[in-house]
Amino acid sequence: MRAPGRLVARLGEGQVPTRTFIGGMRVPFWGINILGGWNVTYPFARLSIFADGVRVSRGKKIFFPFSFLVPTWEARHDELVEVAAVGKIDGITSGVLFRTAERGGWVVFWTVDRLSVLDALSAHGLPVDTTPRRFSYFRPYR
Image 1 (cartoon, rainbow, N blue to C red):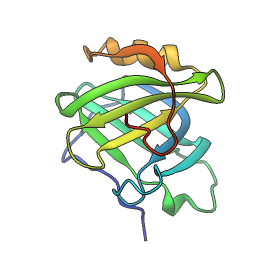
Image 2 (image 1 turned 180 degrees about the vertical axis):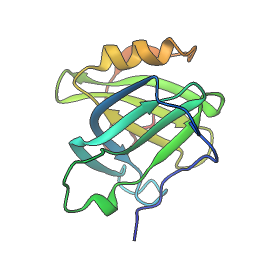
Image 3 (image 1 turned 135 degrees about the vertical axis):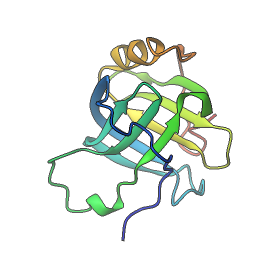
Image 4 (image 1 turned 90 degrees about the vertical axis):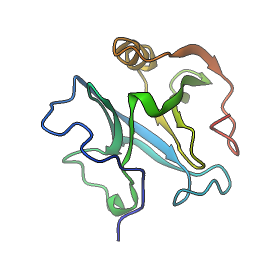
């Protein structure tokens, strides 16, 4: 059984990601925002940035006994209604929020190099809010 995520048909098909980053992720429980979701810690998640969208998924070639619980979350650039810095404590709560308009359509990618991630996203023309906002455990998408 694999944890459900958000998949987009043909995202990145035939493409090599322009940038990839290793980190962690916070996702809603099976697409429902119960208690603000759950975390996959560093280094078990990978952010891949493509010309047409983003993918946050399980890191490749990393042993993680519960890897089947790590979902894949994808969104095309035009589906993203928000890309924002979350967390104000570098190295502890340093992440990037990706949010779509649909219910439960969010993921936080935890990273120790948030500025590089935000720069890579803005290089793709995405409007990025670089001012870190306080991370909310129960409403991380806010």
